[in-house]
Image 1 (spheres, one colour):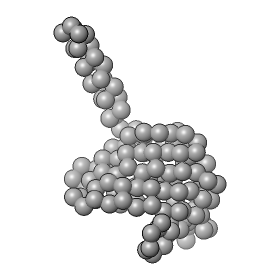
Image 2 (tube, helix red, strand yellow; image 1 turned 180 degrees about the vertical axis):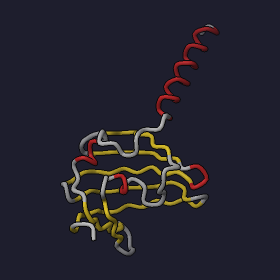
Image 3 (cartoon, helix red, strand yellow; image 1 turned 30 degrees about the horizontal axis):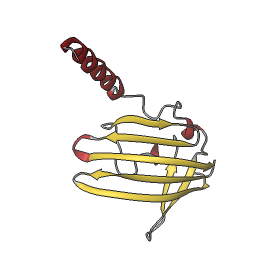
Image 4 (cartoon, one colour; image 1 turned 90 degrees about the vertical axis):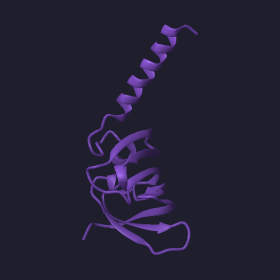
Length: 135
């Protein structure tokens, strides 16, 4: 491979990475699965033992980052289908998270999330069910 061909490939890869790294609007409606779920209070039941966790879902984005909240996170959409959504978020020193949501009904999804909370690794799976309106 010639030097110019290698340079062209590296330039194309760098351009693609920059385009992917550009921050997207916070949980825009273009995330197909989030538009299909009902908003309101959701109960997250851990796949393993643990307490049920309740959260108010207003946009759907709350389900993507259970540990990392706030505007300091950059979002990278890995898979965006009506039945499955995978998003990777980097949040500086707060860590990073990769979350996959699998749609079953407008009131039931499966949620898998893993990453680093600061420097502590985590991996969690939940069955999430809508239980009513936000209180």
